[in-house]
Amino acid sequence: MNMKHSMALVPYGGLLLLLGMVPQWIEPDMAEQAFWFGFTGALLCAAWGVLGLFGFRRRIGPGLTLAAIAFVLLSQAVIRWMPSSADKTESVLLTVLITLTFLATLGLLAWMMPREDFAPHSAAGPEKIQGPAAKPRKAA
Image (cartoon, rainbow, N blue to C red; front, side):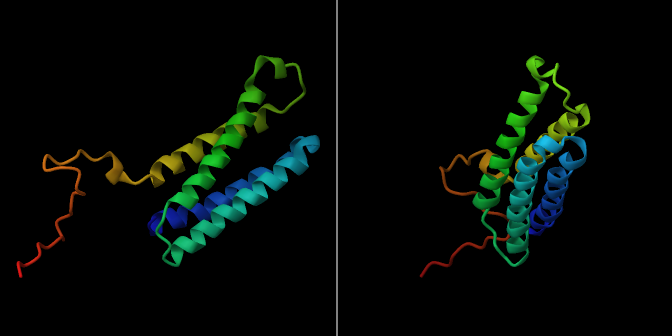
């Protein structure tokens, strides 16, 4: 995880917190569950972002957090877009907002994935391809 990823996780946490507070005004019956989801996701994303700003470079924690958030958002989006829920008096605005947040989560997750995992392998073998700054070792 680099500095750009860390700087993106902190505002994304704020977006999740905002998403958790929106149902209080639109759908009060869903407000408590949405608030706790938004608060927990925002706290985790902000914590990963701050840790990244202080030098934490592993991506597994933020990746798993974003994957869990994406799963919850996907389940809520699917339930809300199903034809059986069309007769309910749910807000279309909240459904679209959940769907857009799901897409933003997937985009952030894809952006944070390491690029070297998708690079073509060298013909020499499965060794990691070194960048131009790598210097060969001197023979002893």
